[in-house]
Length: 317
Ligand code: MN
Ligand code: MN
Image (cartoon, rainbow, N blue to C red; front, side, top):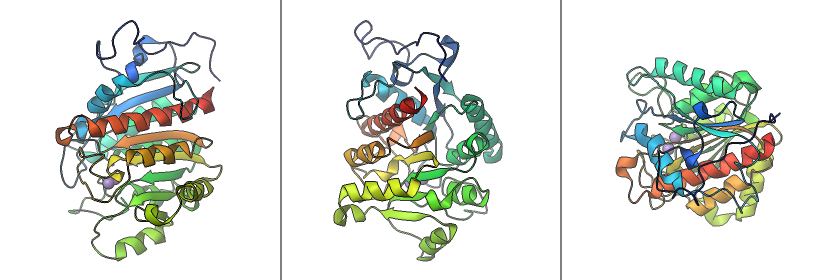
């Protein structure tokens, strides 16, 4: 229940130009600058779980910089997400760059503190390993969660170089730990080469359903949205967006790009199709600014986060 304290909005772009001043997500107040929050945006600058190109540790900074252009009203959802609830930028979670287990514990604690009282949290990654820590924290708050996972990759692989937890494994671990409602969970945008057909059968045995990227050619878009929405049902929902779900034309700045992906327009409309769900947490991960061009990837990621926060704000207010 929001308190009666006045809402501190983002810096007014009519007073201070949007390219000026210190960088927070969408120019929101820092968590230190307000006495409470309803929704927190938090950076997780961790990329020690990557298996190919590194650099997502710089994702939070890149997404924040690209988010300066975001304005207060979201016409696609008819929501002013920062007007009626207190949204804050909680800075970055300090996490160990050399030890994945330690880092996951630090990230889990950081997310848990922001989410206490069932407050939604929006994570800016970071590589996809961080989703496991986020799910662990939110499971303690909400119980098992539905997951809609946008990605080129399944991320239910097994150990890599004898390391059980990497950015290719978070959702296998999440299922094995009982964090997810598997009958309410789905991967969306899957494509690209695999190690073998077993990757798909192993994933199916874990309980996921898949909307393959190729299906966007053959299935009406509204039917895909309906299929995902029906899968989620009324369960508390976590949305995890690996920005490589987008085609490299729409997201070149990422670590494991795969041809044949979604457009940013398609991804945003898929998110908006979930606007009536009980969205309790979300992440946007795998943005690696060093491979980005003209902030293409960071702009897409910042707009995804904005729409997710917009959906969260309608539940809180
Ligand atoms: Mn991926
Ligand atoms: Mn991923």
